[in-house]
Image 1: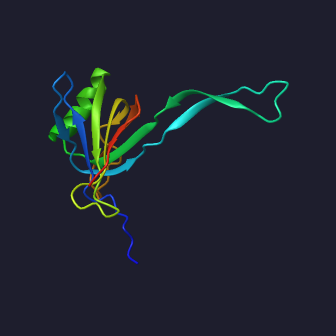
Image 2: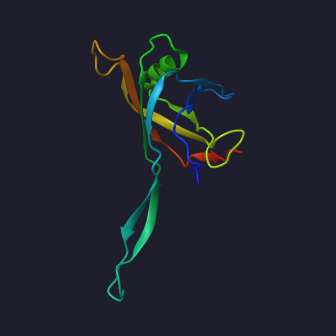
Image 3: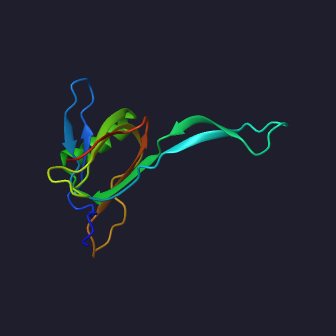
Length: 149
């Protein structure tokens, strides 16, 4: 039986314009995305009459998304990443995944708000590979998932 999973080919990362009526701009030439990874904070609540270790939930942490891509100095999406980092403002992002698992029209889509905490306009400079940029987004709230169809 053939697998119904998919590779990341065709994934689109977009950044919102900010300011009310949100429009999104795709970030060109993204080559690698790592994240989303959620964690629930906890604290030990074991007492003297407990029969085992006990914990209670505290605050969730929605993690960080790391991205790398080929540097294109005039790409509107990459320019928006740079200006958003410089401004230190929260921004909306969308991550449109490719179709998988029998989806015929679209793949799953994740929307989240976050702060760009790291930005590198270029990483390694080499005569044998394209110039790359990278950035990290600290996710501020639980991302919204829209299931593909």
